[in-house]
Image (cartoon, rainbow over all chains, first blue to last red; front, top):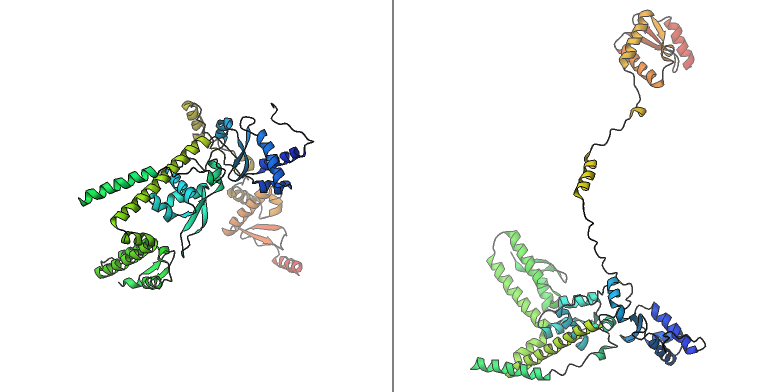
Length: 200
Length: 256
């Protein structure tokens, strides 16, 4: 199994795999199995099987190109070993110099979204306006309707680009953050201490 | 100054202040859309223009604007207001702890995202038309100031005068012809202009004609021409023209 590109023309699945390669190479965003099946004019099951072949061919370490499952679809990316060369040619405007405020805002939108600027401000305790505008400009979050009440604030959610930049298949891949229960207890105790001192 | 008549020009509203208040109180204008700072600015500008401090107006304005601000604040945080008013100190502390814990969680999540950014940062992918990385600025080559000075000195020098000799029209001076005609007239009482200058260039002929006009003006000669384009005859002044009648008839004849 040394030859990474084993092309057997007689295998019809291989033909489909090549079509999928072609589709993925012209796409500028991840393609779902449904997208691929429609474009290749084939059924989803066979596309999945063919994707298995393509994935094997373009596994990390086999080629300069790697197939990855990201943001709910399939996409080619550069191999990690070529990162330095890629960085000399391209910059990454979406994630360059993300501030702490921007990352916290991004986390809130990713975990709680769709949510509005007041929602974010309530959690972070400071205005979220500039952080939100910054993330929208980078294309990491986008508008997603308004709060229900009349004239409600605009809500935001993360974009597929967010999942792609952070290498997530979907938002469900975000880690669970309920392991901070202990710290809630600590905070509560501290607050009680302060309250007792004041009444004393 | 009447505060109620203060003209406003805001994004959400344009018109007098009292109309804005009426609309807000009737719930026809959402106060959340109104830029209260804009109203204050308009009032201050108005005060400035008046150049006198109207205490009564200022007082009225302060009352109105603070009421407006309170309304807006309550509109922006309806639940907040209810929470704060109703919660017992114990419950308030609980609520605060809950919020702090929530913030702590999000801060942790942000930390996770930052780590993720570092571990996943070496994946490059196509994103529509990708912006090219900024070009590295090439430092200047070693400079030679003497050479620069040399070049600037070259630029500072006056350029050589371009000769226009080949294109100049040479006009002989009028005086030359004045003298020439006077000399002719000293010898003869009359002469024919074309005969005298016929061999000269066109420009010289023109200058000669100017000399002729000059002589005529100073009364030294008389000029005759029987018809347009006919030969021009010049006679010394005082010398009667030969046969004026004949000349006249010739003219009449030709023009007829």
